[in-house]
Length: 164
Length: 149
Image (cartoon, rainbow over all chains, first blue to last red; front, side, top):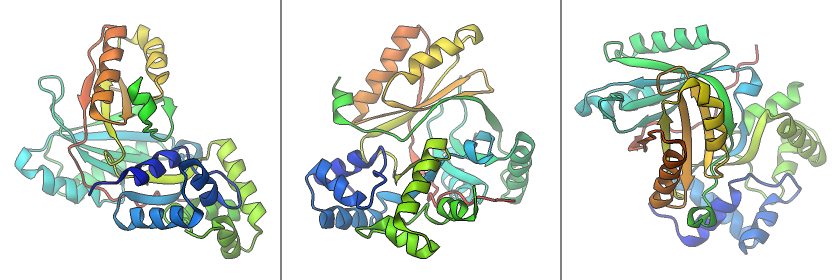
């Protein structure tokens, strides 16, 4: 499921978003040396292969009144984490669901889910409801609510930055 | 924000038309001119409601990334957070209510670049940085259904 250099260049050029102009794919093509048709075909292929998960308007939850978000972390036995992850990843309450390594003794949690809501009480109720409904209430979990956002922007994967 | 703005935010999170004139295509859907679609999106972006019109890429396809966590003494938090945010490789940086109180995402072209940023932050702050790379993802990002009520 690799991407080639041309595709990677396109993804990198797109990381700050499309220019808001009449022909944004043509503009993007100028940056990476592709024709408009080639940009469109490449984006379409990347969408089909699931490399680009979605292409469109990316909203900020906080500015839309979703003021509360919790990173809910779970300590699930390794042999069950795949099954539990797939189950939680499908929940409407969850916007991200990843398995990550434990770092013992500091950090025993291996499954991460993001839950957004209008306020803390709404998020807490959503987490509790989901835990019972999905049969995962018995796993140790912790909800880390965000207290302050210092920075939020799209990932920029530039070669130059990595080389510095 | 009116009903047209709401449809712009709600209906185009997933499949922006792959048409040479995508905003004209959206305008045809919404019954407004291409110029107005562009002007509205630009305004929503300036307000911060829209982060960008672009792509969400599967993690670790274009380069490498990790989630990092630090336990920062409260009196240092603002300074350490500013130091972390100043890295162009850092794209999210949040204070959370836990002993590990600073959480941020580092993205680079490769894993070595990520490791270098974490090491640099650790060296400059004298604090341990937990490296929690994604091992598996379970969620297909379908955007975010907004409830307008």
